Length: 87
Length: 306
Image (cartoon, rainbow over all chains, first blue to last red):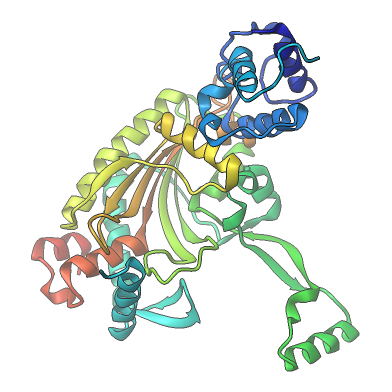
């Protein structure tokens, strides 16, 4: 797992109110739901990720656990073809 | 094999023939007869008999909510396909003449209608959250509200149990996570007891709202994974296609955050609601006990005050 994807995921959170906590204070495996990600914010996050990475998440990934941590999001993105060394 | 849509049409036509529903020329929009309303009143009375013990604060809102309330609720994100907004004529004399000419020619006279500040309530509890939020921080006991209004959802259907305008009777609990969850648990038991007393068969199952599009799939999957919504389903048309007549919902702090509703501890309130679809229950009663109310089981008539 590349840290580059995680870094790009973190950038998507910047300047948003998806979380109640600052994304910089969270570890890659921190529970984002515990950090205040609610269902409407998850929808906004999903749309923001799709735009930032120019991808469309398939139905099977449209689940709560896909967005449960920075790592989980990065894993899902890599699974659908986001390059790990891309910056 | 009879299609479900034919079953829907047949029951709707039966209800119209018996005068219980009155046609308004639009699928899902009906007048109700006096007898139909008596049953609705009976259902409400049975609900009150159980719920009044908790001394809820009663709030009655019109079927319209502020457009700003709809926007702030998040409903446009999750269910834009169901939304109804009120439009109105907003022009001068020339626009009026043009509109009437278009109407005369059978054209689209609504082209110059503009949205007003009013939207239709998608659920009875939508007026409650902003009202409680506007009061400032709640006490330790949180809040409990009894609400009841006509709701609108844009889903025209031949199914008489899928009306576009229908009423929900609800209790809404606002407080801590524990308070909201305890409320929902209590009402899941109460709801089953009430429907049992109506002599109706039912099952309770985890459910999801009919959210829109791809983002809706995510919302629906999350809602199910977390068991946020349960429905009490009664077979009205067919055993394998039961109709949700009551729902028991836990919203986490979604509305607490959307409306700045604060617990005594200063955290966003968690909310839960129980909703009874009074028309659907009425339709289930007529389906299971027949159109002649005087022939309904005596016990059921007693509970409903008929």
